[in-house]
Image (cartoon, rainbow, N blue to C red; front, side, top):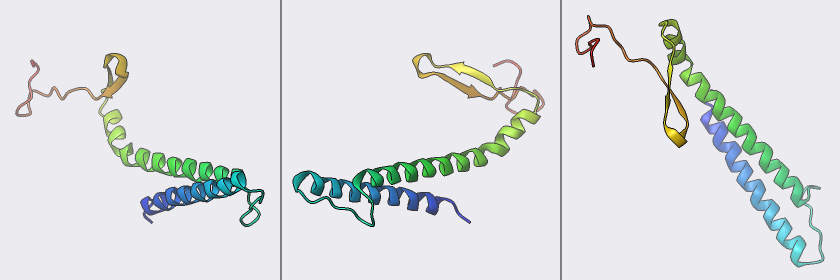
Length: 111
């Protein structure tokens, strides 16, 4: 089952919940009427928004990790650990070591 439509649906639900909460809060502030939709007040819709967005983020992270799992395993099984490259203020980036097999065309021990 594809996960991306579920992530899109969660994001759409979060934005819908946020807009409903903002609308209810606007009515709450401008009038003396205290609206509730299905027994939920504006802070409840904000909580629902946060839950939907965090769940969508968790699903997206899971998909990203699963898609990169095979590449990481092949690098680990090759026996050469990835190295870290310092980009100054940008932080560290993990880069796999270059292929140094002199038998392959285009690869040489000296670069």
